Image 1 (cartoon, rainbow, N blue to C red):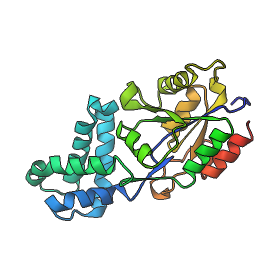
Image 2: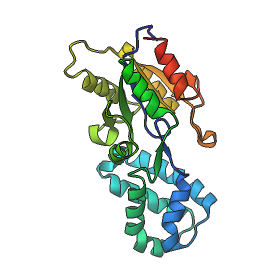
Image 3: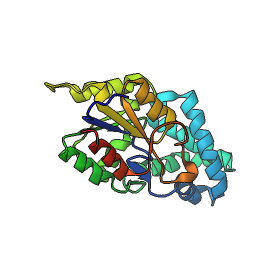
Image 4: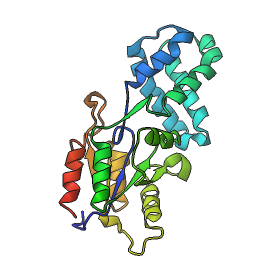
Length: 246
């Protein structure tokens, strides 16, 4: 890629800047338990990603209604883990309410180690930072609750803009938002996008004309950083990479 100086660092959110505070299956087990009894954790660990991928394929961009979309994920996860269908149907609104609340704040998420520090240091270096995420609008309240700096702007979420990674449109839209009102525009070659998914983050950004780095997940067991992308281990390595290109 180009040897241009880096002026914009865009970030994925989940598993990049923001991590689940505890495993997703544990959160689901806790929310199901008052209504359905204690579902097997291993069964929930298997059923959740299956339900998630099915909805991502069948109803991209949250199908226009993120709450209904997640309600279907939650329902399919419970059924896949052996929940009684009638009891689940009767209690589903309460379960959905609880999980949507948990994953709207620091109750369900935490900042990745050194992430806020690195964002602040990039700002001090004069490097703009932004978010490009396929998450829904709840992530706005999450990053606010976790104390991420206001300089992390704009926050581009697929649910709001109508296209999602790895499409080049979402990356180009982000740069257009950053450049709005700037006298000296940032070029695509002066941008680097960072995320944990080879297709959505690394390949998508490069297809859009940006530089890209693949950040290793903290939870290696779930990691999706395998591939031919340029990989970094942690936030401090990202800061070093950018500093060498200022």
